[in-house]
Amino acid sequence: MKKSSILGAALLLTATIVWGVAFVAQSSASDKIGSFTFNAARAFIAAVLLSAIVAVKEPVVKQRALKANQPYEKTARMKRLKKSLIAGAIGGVALFAAVNFQQFGIEKYPSDTSASGRAGFLTATYVVFVAAYTAIRHKKIHPLTALSCVGCVGGMYLLCMHGGVQKIYFGDLLEIFGALCFAAQILIIDKFSDTDGVAFSCAQFWVVAILSVIGAAIFEEVNLTDLKAAWLPVVYAGVMSGCVGYTFQILGQKYVKPAVASVIMSLESVFAALAGWMILKETLSAVELCGCALVFISVVISQLAPAEEPKN
Image (cartoon, rainbow, N blue to C red; front, side):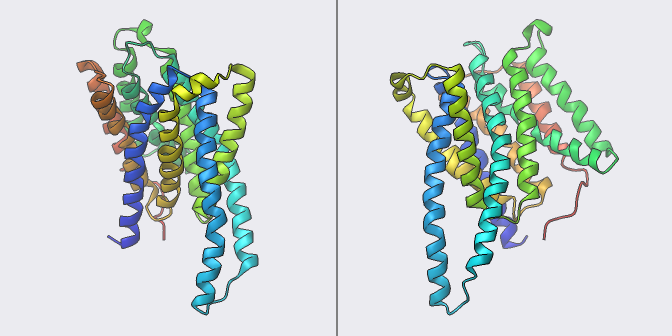
């Protein structure tokens, strides 16, 4: 395996661990502040940190080039930066929808529900949606892709509806909508994989922050006391899940095949369930665990079908 592939896999694996634990932070914050407020705060923290990195990065690159007696192509770099920011803004719209559907879903779960585990596994179905989109785009559906979709539906039934239709939660539907939006965000990142990852992530979070502030101003009552009470999950989600996790995702997808990247990122669901079990003492029934296992197996199977050429 090439060193670049190992680096990409390591970045993606780190991101999935961070995201898995973030489900605990999101569950904790949902009891204190609204979803738009939470995502506005976390995105603002990530955007500010990434803006500082972008501002410092260019002078450092220029200085290194001068010391090494290498040309510093300012025009080309500024053109790439502009493209990165535009691409990041597009990705930010998809991410705004994804994180807010996800957070609203967690917020809507009953208090006696294993919100972290359910949300984590339902979010992981984005890899099935990505595989299905790829198959449709190529005008055919690979048998393994079809099998994974059927398995995923079966797993979600066991996880969400094993007690009958009355057992499906509104939060489950919101999580699935969120998964669709995450799939769109992944495809956008793949399309603009030649851009500056840090600048892309920076623009992405400024868009999420601005749109979430608008949503909070319209639909929520922002209370500074409640925001202070939720400072720890907000900071974790902003610094680790946002600044670190999503930036590592963008950088990791540059070096790893989409199929491998999707399999690694699907492990987010496992870490979410483990974090909920260890930190929040959440439990899943035997039937729900079977549903989780079937969903996880399905997202892995969905990536075994040859979908596209490897990245260079």
